[in-house]
Length: 109
Length: 118
Image (cartoon, rainbow over all chains, first blue to last red; front, side, top):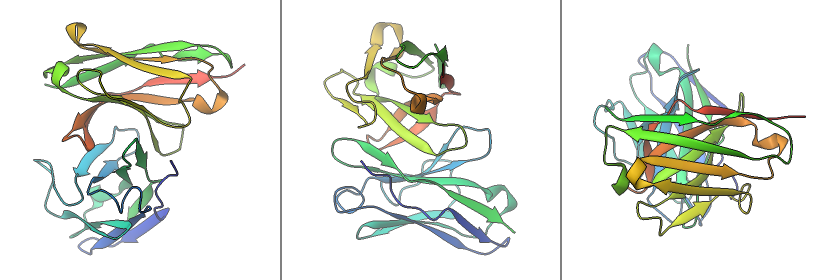
C-alpha cells in the first residue's frame, strides 16, 4: 500500500488555472475509476471535492474538475481564488484498501 | 445535520492500548460504510480501516493490520477502533469518517488525538 505520488507544491495567480497530478499504479489509480480529491485548510477537516475521478458532490464549484489517464489522475482548479490556497489530497481504492497521496500545498500568489 | 464526534484519544505508552469511539447522528448510520483515517502532526492523511454497514466487509491498512480492530454498533450509532500494541508512529489525529458512494469520504469528525510516548 504505497502512497500515491503528488507534487509537494503547486502555485498560480488569481484567475489562472492549476493542475495537480496524482500518480499511482495499475493496481490502484489505473485499475479503478475510484479516485477522489480532498481539500484541507490549516486546522480544518478535509472536504470532498471530486469522487469517482470526475464527479463533484453537491455544493462544490465547477471550477474544480478531475480527470484520469492511465495510472495518473489530475485535479484542475480553474479561475483560482485566494480561498483555494490549501492542501490537496488524492485517494484511490485498491481493491483491498484505500490509499492517499502525500498531499500538495497549493499557493495562490 | 450530520455529526461525527470522536472520543477516547489520549497519551499512552508504547505497547499500550486505547479504544476510540465515534458517535454518529443526523443520518442513517446503519446503512453507511464507515472509516477511520489518521493524520500525524504536520503530515498527510492515512487511511486506517473501514467497515461495511452490516460488518461483512472489514479492511485494514498494512501499518495497523493485526494490531487494530474496527467495529460498530448500529443500535447505538457508534463506531469503534480498538488499538493494541501502539507505537510512536501511531501518534496522530484520528478521524471518524463516513463513506460516500462506496468510493470516497464525504463527512469527517473533528478528530481525537492519540499520542504514543514514554
